[in-house]
Length: 169
Image (tube, rainbow, N blue to C red):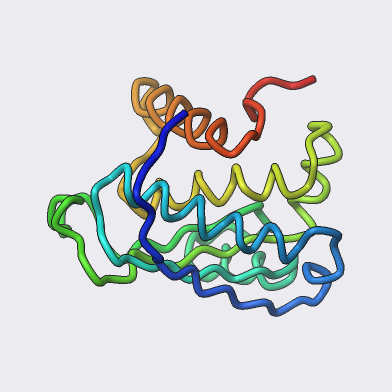
């Protein structure tokens, strides 16, 4: 198991649809997300970084997707990095910065978790990991990048007892 000296790195959660709070284990998941974020940041040797996480619904995420990506449909998660691979310092030099914003749609994720036969908050955690890796300038456009990103996602999720999200039961 991967162990690290975790620092408290804030995950600023903004909830604009209370359906999230109505889910069993929501508070536990919020604490888990902070630990997951700390682990990712530690693995990338960043320190005192933060992220904003908007928990929303299809209406809001559809509008964000339309405004920022010119795609008029809802999606599961959107990442808005503070840095691009061209304008950021090496990851190990990132200190005391917000690395970006994430927005997650309850509706899409609930539909996916049912379709993939995955627990809702496991799916949320996977997407959170995926989004944070995007904020750290990882991508999956090229095949080798996709494989690297997926393997890292699997490794991180395994630390927290979450099964491989790419294996469908």
